[in-house]
Image 1 (tube, protein in one colour):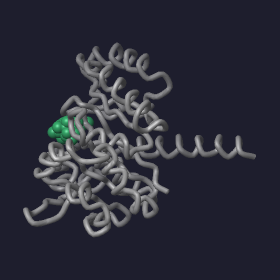
Image 2: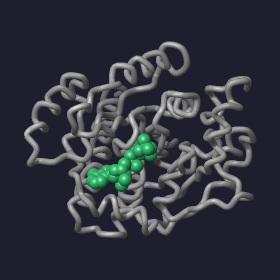
Image 3: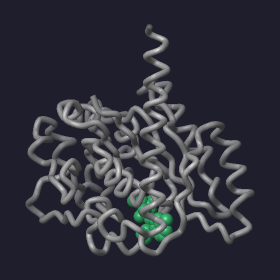
Image 4: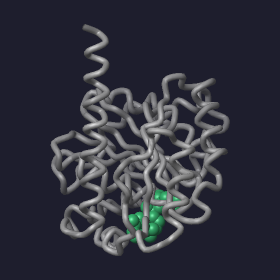
Length: 265
Ligand code: ATP
Ligand code: MG
């Protein structure tokens, strides 16, 4: 069964998609079978792999309303063990249509059920809002990964995000956990860094990833070639950081599994 991680932060432009694309690519390179689910109408994660949908192609919107079709809609990428469930601007309409739908918070979870056995990890790239699409992402997930841009206003909105996660744990998905908070676009020359990082640590005790993602122009260039950084420039600082993040995540999971196993025996 796949572990499912939603990348969430209602703040725009903090590195959710860059992290989803490149973490997915490195997990696949490290031997995992990975599905990247794009539930953002901006479809940036899809474009990040060079997947552009025509008006007649089916995409994640159709999955939300016709769950059995998911395996026909998932597409391969240039990395052999990485698949993508693409988005399309039409998905914006789904956010409205979902409002009146029965079980509207559970649509993505239901749709993913038949795909779960085919993957080790499923990453869900959420839009910059706490609306129904993001709620579908959170309810479908086991864990939340929160990318936080290292800047003065980094913590703005975090309280609201944590409150939403808490509401989902209380009403919709009791075992939703926090996978971790990730510092993105870090600039070691900026004096701001240390103070912001200390504040984030206070918000997420033991949950901040040791890996920081540096600000690196190669990461920003890669999507325009439809390539993850592992293909576009694997020696760049951004690439090294995302590989380290993938390794850190895998080793956290191994330790967790060991603890579970020891408790059972
Ligand atoms: P949205 O909320 O709109 O979905 P997002 O949180 O998914 O945005 P991204 O699209 O990943 O954020 O990043 C925003 C912009 O910053 C993009 O142009 C991206 O290429 C750039 N960017 C992301 N991470 C880095 C980085 N570490 N270094 C330099 N540029 C970056
Ligand atoms: Mg995005």
